[in-house]
Image (tube, rainbow, N blue to C red; front, side, top):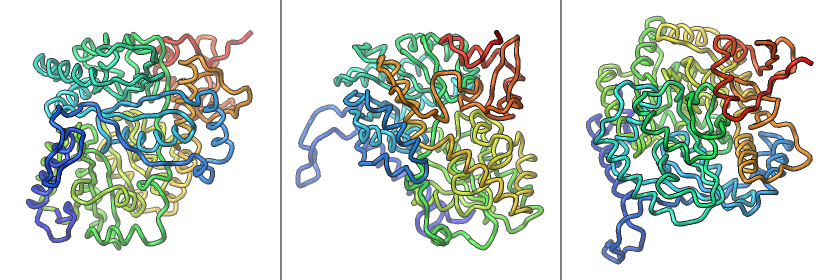
Length: 539
């Protein structure tokens, strides 16, 4: 492993470990600082307990800036949807303000909702490292980890949940709670007059039974549960409503914005990469579900036929993921003897601009997930014109339909084979990436996500939608949706399937095939709880 996992070329790997530890300790210390000013000696002028529910400051953004990439019709549609909701107070609550896809989405979504006239806030919980160790175990349990969560750990979860729930004093019309960390908020605080929405970014279709038994009663306090795919919803959700809203990327964020010609190569050269050689890149948290060791195995298989190939594993660390440091150490040991594998983190100098550069300059981006909620990095890469080889997991096939954007794989051998095929035929790789970019433009850019959430908010508040509306690429209601992914359906009869006398329509052949494998799963998960269907019956 080269010393590229540090911010300064030439720094030793053990120094990188120390630098990361110092950064981690500083971030944790800052998270627990009480509000208030410091005196001239750096001492706090307040002596109260630190807040465990903190408001995140966001900048200003303007929706009209998205007209160039999304089109006037979509931007106008979002603005029309927002008119009846002007002045509505909406709170987003999650575990961390940095690291991971949820924080990235909210960093852009909250200021855009303010631009639309809503009173939008974003709060994070600042539990102890022990609390986030527990919530990571709960997260894994929702994804089916058989290890479960010990009773002592549940007591930590209950205690910290009660503490931060007591600190939510403001009044809101709608509260959106993301993932399991703040899940107990309405149960412990009380619903007041707000509408509550749980946004689950996890594939929770087959949760650990014991973990689900503890979490399920908490969901009875929610008006709606939102999932990336209908198949992700557990079969016995107590919420009265289930909605399907896939995530999206912000094309104008530092991580995704256009870079001038040659800039990406200069950034990678500064880090220490050889920009003249083929480069494979995986960008993700250091998480066992992302299968970084499987990526390394695939890289070794590729290197047997292409000795010049390099691999960059770029990981984001976050306070709510203590397990990431364990995986980081495992990877460090696995790659220690290979000078062509680069291990980089956001805590040692690799931020959003650097990730942007890696995704643009890479010959192939890999996302070999074993379980996945959505995998924003797939859309990020193909939006930049880079082909992707990704695990056939969760919401990833939704982003690579019918071969657009790259290849889906189920093993390290398949991954290596797909990478070699793309490296051997750059022209075809570019064509696949271009097709994938168009999929992202139509389905997975931020204005579409905001439109979906505005429709759901309006429905929860019983606010009528505008009389005239442009048909969205994705909706949260109506008969224009694919039962597998929630996308706008294709009018071509080739994408229609009849099941038990009912005609179902799909956006792509891949969703059509997925439905055929297990139709009852999608009928139950998507339509059972809310009593709607996009199906059309004869006669």
